[in-house]
Structure formats: structure tokens, C-alpha cells
Image (cartoon, rainbow, N blue to C red):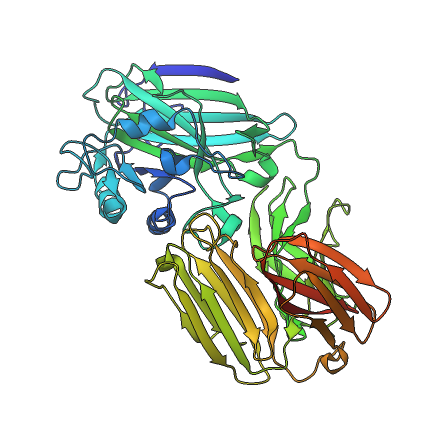
Length: 573
């Protein structure tokens, strides 16, 4: 629900030298640029647009504001995808273009027409991303006849947002009626983004969730030099938008305001992050999240975590303790200036540990007003060891091989092998890779579109195996990427691979296989898409497994003994 409290008055600077406004300047200023960015989670090149907009913002932090509007076919959610669309997007986008040539990402800079830069017909306002920077800079260098100021706060007990806007006219508007717009944006929403390269972990920023003033704003009818506008809006933020959480402790809500002459031509604007009121404690820091680790080869890590201030006072110093596997904690003191409900990524100094099959990192903040929310943790595994310096990579490509790339990096982060993109649809790639011994490696295969190489557009798959046929990683239905960390060290600190032996026979098989090992074991069977289809355990040294009900093809069996595992490919005839 939206409430509006309006105090609009015409004040003339010469007659009233002591004005009542507090957050807006009365001096003539240049315009602030408002980029309405048209985007979508299934738009491959939209992350490039986000990066361009972020760079403009970084160079003009107080004079440039972004409103990300998810709209159009690329914003239509697929199965399991979030719906970032709003009721406002279609009308805003549709007024920006006419004729052929429109696409995504695109956007408008203050809804102005820039002759020669139009994405579609002359006179329209939609711009391709390659001219956003020059157009935003042009806007910032234009003089404005109205200045805007804004401040916002959220009552955490009832989610009520209060937005206070002031506007002062340093000149006359050519229109007798202007339109004041108030946009609410949500930040730090994690989800999928095609082309983002991080699967479902893309961080969506400046995302429009609501227009407090409706589709085209509220009327401002005093638009001559000296006019002073003072408006306060209140709005209760719901628990979610289209099922996407709007938890104010996570979202870093942002407000952008702007004044238009009509429905087009944004004269100027401004923005502010919301502050928060009625919090329970003054000094309260929490471990918001702990960055997860891939499998680790060595006995040292560099922990990262997200620190959040949930107290009413700014955080300027926080004592941090962190340990692995319940060993003696290390202590680090962070200093800075963190506002209420804002977060900051903290990179902790290196910590050494004795690797185990499974390891746990615990981070705690022992000194604040509430000790019930001070701890976070993450677990990570020891990387598998493969006693082979030669690997065989096989890729059955899908119908879009230009989307497929891969590489292997060493412990220094240097790519020692790479491949793709490819040109032959449904083709086969086979390559032998000779690795330097005694190092830690990371294999990554990527699909640029984000749908893997199986199974909508062909039945692609891949395997990375040792010379003896032991599977390092395989699959096909992996989204944006699949990754495996492994080593070819001669020894393990916690379990010796020399004593880990198992065999699978016959292989290929008609469906009945025999599995034997030198210790009791448990096992899992996976199909090419990475789905677990069968599992079990053996309290003896051998086990007969019935896979007759499964279709012919390639499968993987993973055997675990005392927390150490090996995987082998099997073929059902």
C-alpha cells in the first residue's frame, strides 16, 4: 500500500532567501543521468550491458543511476528460473523504439533522443549498449532546470519504506506539468543469468521491483523558477515480488527518483540507499555467508566471508576468529565503516591445516551485542588423487559447438591446456593431455548459453579419464559449467591411494556387474547427465550389482572407502 504526503509550494528565491528545503540544492546544476537498462535472465549479452553500466556508475558515482528493467522474451522465466518482470516494464520499453532493429540489452539515457545513435527509427530513444557511455556523459554535461534530492528509510518491524523527495526549480520548465517518479530497486539477488558464466550464482543489481508513483509518475504543477516541491511517500515492502524474496536484511533496497517533462525526457534525478530504523541492537555484526571452496589439494586456504551490519550503529571495527577442524583459531581485526544492513566481503589471511577427507571452516565474531548470530561455516573435501600424468579427454559435442570451451589450470592458475569453441555440430573431440607430475589441477568445461551440451539440442557428453580408464569427471547436462579439482600427487596425507583398489567386471556388461575392493565400501551409480540412479553398500569385499533395468549407454560408478573415492566408467550393452 502506498501513501503520499504532499507539501508543494512555489517559493521565489529572491523573496524568500531562507528556504525550508534540506536535501536539495538551490544552485543551478547539471543533469544527473538515469539509465533505464532493458535486460533479461536469458539474454546472453546482457552481462556485458551490466558491466558497461557498472563502469559508468563507478566513474560517476553521484551523477549516474541505473534502473535494470527485466522485460521482453529474454526475461520470460524458464523452468525453475525467477520471474524478475514487473507490470511497468512493457510500457517503458515499448515507448522507446519503433520499427526494426530493437534488441537486448538496450536502454535509454534520460529517455532522450540522440540523433544518429538510435537503435531503431530516427527520433526514438532506445540505445544499443555501445553508446551508453557517450550518451550518459552527454547527459551529465547538460544543464538542468530542476534539482532533486532524496532520502529513504525502512522500519524493520513492519517493512514500511518512507521516501522523502525534494525538488527545486532553478529555471522554468517548458511544460506546465512535470511528472515525479519514484522507483524502488532491489540489489544482491542471486540467480541464473545466461552469459554470466557463474550458473545460478549471478548477482543481479539495481533491479526494478516497484514504481511507488505508478507507471508515469505523479503530477507536479508548479514548474517555474523558484518552485520548491516537497513530497513524502510511504510504501509497505511485501515479503516477495513474484515469489522472489524481498527480505530487507538481504536486499539492500535502493531508491531512484527522477522528473520527466512528459512520459519522455527525464530532466534530472537522484538516488539513495535506504537507511533502517528500529533495529534491536546498536552493535551487531553477523557472518552473512561463508564462501564455499572447491575440493582442495593442499593444506592451506584463503577464507572469504560476507560481513553484515545488523545493528543501528556503523561498524568500524570487528574481531574475527576462524579455524579449521576445531583447531586453534586465528584472529583478525577488520576495520572500516559499514552502514546498517550493508555487507562487505572480507578476505582473511591464509590459514594452514592438516587435510582430512572432509574439512570444516568456522568463522565467528565474538564481541557484539548479540552472540546468537555470530558464526558461519562451510565444509570442503580433499581433492581426489589420480596416479596418472596422462589424461584422455573425449567430448561429444551438441548442435551448438561454438558455445563449448574448456581448460585445465595448474595450482598457479595458469592454463596449461584449453580448447574450443568448436565449429562442427555433433562432432567428436578427442585429446590426450600430458600433465606435469605432483601438482593440483582444475578442469572446467563451459557452455556459453548455459544449457550444457545435453540434452535439448543434441546428446552431447564428455569424459576426462586416466590412461587406465579411471574417470576423473564426466557428464553433459551441466548448465553453464562443470568443474573438477584433482591432483596427481604421489601421496595423500589422510589415506593412501596405494591401498585403495577396486575392480568392476565384466565391463562392458549386459547389466550384471561384479564389484570388488580390498575393504568394505559404498557405491553410487550415475548416468551421463550426472543423476544418481542407484546406490548401495557392501559389508564384504565384493558385491554383485543389477543394472538390467537401465538403458544401454555410458554410466559411472563411484566407490568410496573411508572417505576417499574413485570413479570408473561402465558401459551397458
